[in-house]
Image (cartoon, rainbow, N blue to C red; front, side, top):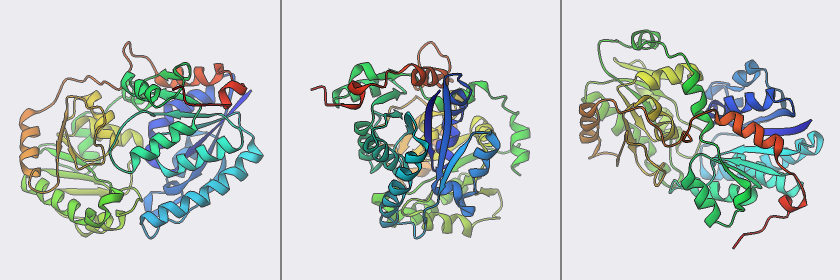
Length: 378
């Protein structure tokens, strides 16, 4: 059987990849293992490795890294720690393919390990833009990868312009949309009561992550966002941020209002609970990729704040604003507009499961010397 090794560092990447990982695990020609690192192993971030354990997927290694202090220096040092550890694991596991998602540091370390061990690297969600440190990291992973599974045709075209071989790029759609289609969403009243919110009042789902280049202002930014939402008389269901530079300030600001009337704060929501909240929220606020990619499948209005998702392809349900002065106007505009048609550019035309396309492509790929000796096509 062909051995596939996936690297997971956050609740977000595992939630997005769960359908694809399950499809790989269940494919008769594939054998899946998972290297777990980063926030998954942190109690402060929900100890979400438990979700991977509960899924029945085989964890081949756990690679802890320090998450404090939450600075760019910590992020950079962790790249070296993870790279060394991933090489050791891969030398033992000897996977036939290293599978990666997106733009995070653990994925970059995994790509570097794989290419130096002469293991083909497959990358999902390459070719997209974001305008912060995430964008060059994403493109670096793409240039280190041999197989590409893009969410949109525009992302595929961008990879071709970057010099990637068109024969090795497949538009699969976003795998994180698979479980949105398949999930049975509880009704709004049940979802809100389960989170301690009043179903008779509107609520906003808040997810705000720090941006490396703006880490110094992250605490002030989340404070301004909370004030604007409260001024609009919205209930707030807020999730704690990731562990990137600036997250200490965001976590402290959120923790300081824990227990305030109309505000519910969670370190983590299990994927089904998060999907239910996103589906019935009157407004999604912040800078999470879930607002850009997933929320459109429910027609949920999204107020996207700041540069973290800059230049990514937009669905019609997105309104972009800067922090501070534009927040109040943006909140009022989206609440007045209400829900949008449930259409999504990140779902491949014709529908179907991205997960199955990815698993089938991993099983069928020709892993020969031509693939490994990659060069720019221009």
